[in-house]
Image (cartoon, rainbow, N blue to C red):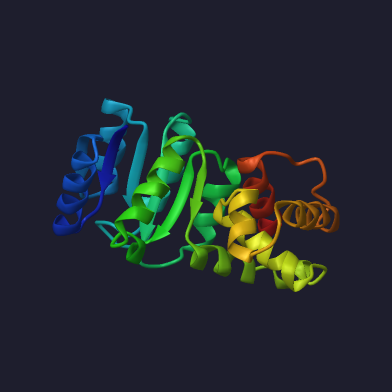
Length: 212
């Protein structure tokens, strides 16, 4: 895949470039601020953008806002956000606009090379990859509507929002796939999301509901 990196820490940026190149990916640009990121995306049209949230000049939310602009201007470009923090408002905006090819990882996941590369692959292929802590924070924003769910259904919902398949959820919860499917059907019924089908559509439906 063609990957553009945006990270203001030179050490982390260069380390990610080396990792990606060693894994066979092409990195046509690696930049340190949001303005340079937008220019690089327009020039190179990558498959995936990996961007930090907080970058110069204010170190607040430049990277996240750039990610939203990229998704709007270049809808075929997948975006994987890296951050030390959960930026809830813009995270919901990014995900609920279209969850195909979107991910949000906390930076401590980057040191787990296998998890980072797996997330990059899933996002690049049009899937979703959300850090469990990001999902937990977003779920916490909407406690009352989720009170209709059982504890097991909440567990299944959290794993769905992380982007796991039915088989993966079954393995993680040590239940059968059919049990997971029954829980999912119940979740959609209770949350009035019946009719939503497909891996990414499930994630999108969950997060749209959280936004509401």
